[in-house]
Picture 1 (cartoon, helix red, strand yellow):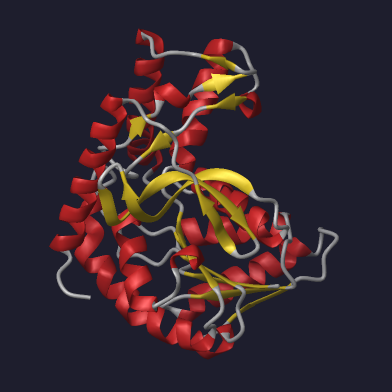
Picture 2 (spheres, one colour):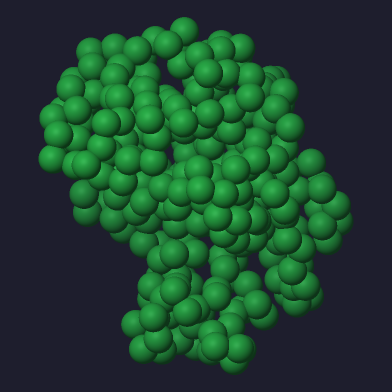
Length: 303
């Protein structure tokens, strides 16, 4: 199993470190616009791996070295700048990054699964799907996975129930139009309906990414471990269900856009996109998310 991480900024480096602690692959390749940065990270990680029970090969390289990758994790991005900056403001510049990197990566690894982490993740997942020519089941955006994990964590503290036993999803855009699918929230077979508390926790979830960025200048660890959840399910064919950004095809009148829905992830990538029965209000919110992402896609221009 060969994993290539494109971009060794804070997020890419955090994912690479997580992949070193939990070595899922036989080879981990790091690519970066500045080769020296990738080299430095690879050497540091190689030293870290010496205290792990692994013989995983860790190295930096160039695009030709990625040949035969099973999974490509794409984190490359233009600098974020102001921590309060909206993710959608990165769209046009990050499209150019995709256009530069994706075609030669696809040529080198035509059978890879592509995981998009860069923001705005939904619009870029759609762009990566079109640029790569890959089938939809092999292009996955991290989407609202981390948002859902954060939400479950907050619900866990409030309900005093372990987060693993809570099934609660944030769906739609990984952005300001995301929404909590309250009608689907359940634990132990018992449905819990929206309350002032759950609405407050959801709003806190929406804001927490910006808050972390304001406090430390960026986010990295949460998205790194969320990405590892996807990698783990692919590599071991676990078929876990996660809310990730996928191509939507005729769901509540929404199509030809990437948004987060609960999806089953296995060795082939997305093995099934679930179509949960949303309430009328949630259907409206899902369509609103679709409109926001479609506007973002149009703002990027031709690709």
